Image (cartoon, rainbow, N blue to C red; front, side, top):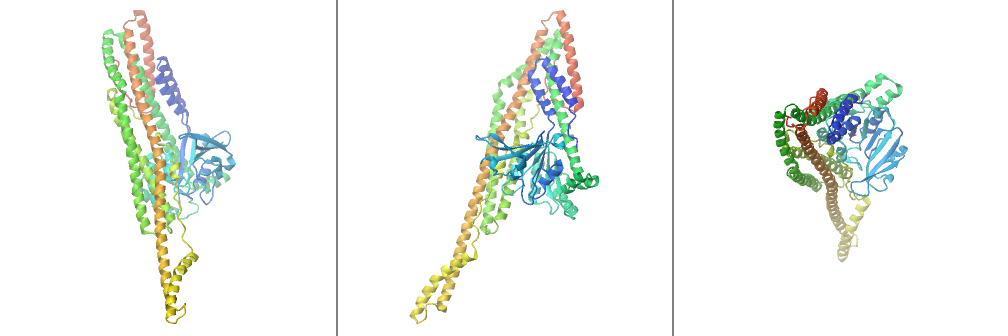
Length: 612
């Protein structure tokens, strides 16, 4: 698969625009365009692979990149997020939590030992493991592909749904794997719904089709499940084993039967092509915005040079626009107060939403515990609880995104004097480390007592009955052990056994409720911290974005006003030379705008006032 965007034309037009901005001494526009050029030069695309346990994720990753790098076994092998990227030499680093909050530490790990790296790896030195980053020389990875192999959803000791969703917002594509043995489960469908809202390119891969002859029936059933849930994503049948054999034997027929051709087609059409269009659109928008700012100053000065009367009118217009922009810039407290209040409300609302979801889960869990013996069904409880909590945390994340976009729209209303303004993409700010919340585990309950202990409880209870009834019987001339004393012992022994059974059941239920509360408290504690960090990132993004808009607009108007005023004082010879220079620059700017328009239909993000 060819994954590199044809960036040369984009970089060429960006370089020319940067040169014009430098010639006009607009360092702010140069910085903005350089940031866009940096994104164009970086062709990497993150492909996140996820799914339930034993669905063949690691084997799929190995077959995808044609490299035996991820451990494959019948039990759960991947317990930490593994990021595979290109490197000239093979090396691995374990990223762990630093000494201070928010810091990370990178620890070198031998490549041959990455299969043994887990959430409690000795390489981590007792610190929380965030992810494992591996660089290997590989042709597919050299094309800019970054593959992220995530832990199994709901696996014991894994990051769970919350941890996987933390990696989705910055992903260019998400591949959700489910094997052909069974149909999609409700937790998988719910997870797909959340992923679809966080990432525009999602596909369901039906794995292990070589093992199950009935995979076509499962394929159709899964399509019906997704259709009923309103989830419109492509579903592709694949076989990692056939792919591996095809590469080893150089067999094209096996390669086609493996289904990996459709996977690469999906990545080409839904990731590479979409990314190319997005890059072109971003370049077109930024060039259009920059040239509009440049044309404002050049055009205002040129009008003043050609026609002093029209120049005077342009100066008055610019002064009025500058006053409005300056007033907005000086009164940053107005929109910043809206932003600050919005973030404060958002922190409280998001926290309340999460705690309300967890409280409802706690109530449902306690009701179930009151009706069942948790000791017999504790594994089912753990599976249900971790899945439900993961869904709740994911929905809370989606709600955060919706509210953040709404807040950005609310703040943008303060910039109506400047025309329509673009809104920042808050999706990348949702990325974060949710592994701590996802790795919270449910405490184990005391196991059910064995037959020997139950007999001991019955014998201990029956002893008193045998003795008491036997003593009474001796008054009637009976022996100490007689049918009456044995019956009394059996009766009291049965009662003691039942009482002990009820007491232990009550204790197991109390312990189970306490374990559920502790688990939910741990999830709430870690998730609340990650949510606050996420909202701080959103706050900084919106603040910097709208501050930059206000500053660029004010500077453009200042430059235009100064140039128009200085043009009136130039002598005739200097006026003619300056007019020729401005005409050449304006011609270059107009040419850049025409070329940008051919990249993608672009709407100017900010409608500045015309020069005259």
